[in-house]
Length: 442
Image (cartoon, rainbow, N blue to C red; front, side):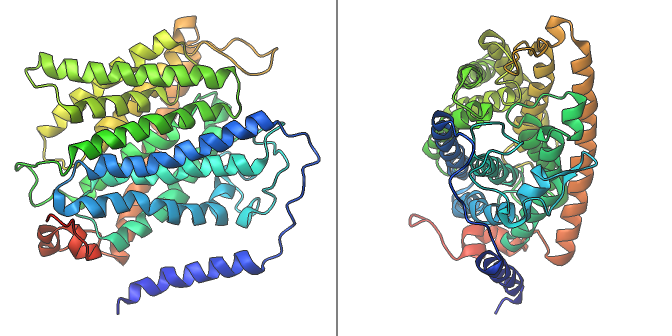
């Protein structure tokens, strides 16, 4: 009997009991008019973003060795269970509750989804029930820790991983979401623009992945030949991610409106430009154009456009996608010359791609879909250097916060549960050693 699992089982029972027996007001028809068109679009956007996590599972699963494909895919899939319950219990409050110093939300504000109903909240404006906003934000919270898994694929203990993503979600993701998106959040007050999570999702995941790669050290087989398990899985995963990203970015307009349309267009364009830029760079360097690298390039473009999607023009998104692909491609090449074992290049793709996107947002922002009397939104191209300064200052803060916080989280988890599997378990493969399952052909 593995006694460790008694703890999460007890926690699940406690949360279940709280949900069943704590007093909760009935969800009644809203007294404020609801915009049914916006609600319909946001329901679709929620589903699209949730689909990205299984898409990520295919994307990552296809890249690892055959003996680790199931474990790698499960690490993404399980986030849909773990993070969903954390979000409902206290995560949404920490991210969007009443601000405490602009750093984090009051955990009591929406504890166990209290006060989260059909009435619009101050977080979302008129016409959109708070509950749909909370569920939309949940989908972002789910995929962020799943992104990290690619850095330590093929060598992490599953029980340690579950504790890791729980602590990352509560202690890193939720404070960043509050700082960037809450009206009183520190980065929001500084004027930092993060339309759909370039900083909150991708930079944070990329930096935490970098720390994870350092902390768990390299695989025994690192540096040797490696054949991806299933490249068609990578292509399928990319397609699902690209498709779901329309909900990720266009949904962040929080309505069926012009900004959603703009974000839809910039998202597709940046992905297209990045996919082509990546494979053309490979060709110039004498490499064959590969399906997997085309997919990686597309995802980098999607990452880079995320913070800018609703603020920049479609032509600008071509540059953002292409320059991000070039920067990430260079970072992957540099990493390959080091001993760093970021298995699936999470930091070069999501970390560097997110940083490029954050800086480009400050350079090219030129659209304001706010109030009719709002001042024009301009970036460096429009003469607003203050926005770039704010973004660079925010980048420094985020790097320090995520790297420092991640090191502490990895260290704490490792004290409780050794995170690295034993050498013989790694050799056997995590599918069998962690889950007792394997592909029929293996």
